[in-house]
Image (cartoon, rainbow, N blue to C red; front, side, top):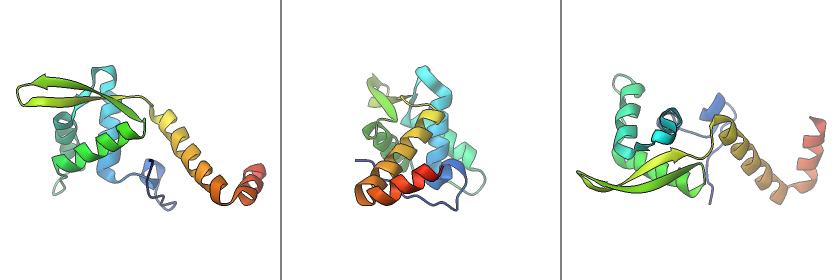
Length: 124
């Protein structure tokens, strides 16, 4: 089940993602069909967070797995030096992810406020 917090005061993808989550998703998008394992994503995010900031590997892994559950990413099981791990690949690009967010919000509003939602959408 899709679950995110929407903060309209934030810019861009930060409306629904924390800084580390946006960085993680962007890294997987950059890697494309080459894919990235959680360790690669974790290292890239911590480098990009900047001085004095860091995020745990577990937080990265939980986020990536949530994105798989939501259909934003897909993963493939692999085996290597450290045992079994997942390699993550994008299903949606950034534009597709934005559409996914809009559909999720609109679907939710239509369930709870169908008349008002239709009225507001017609205004656009």
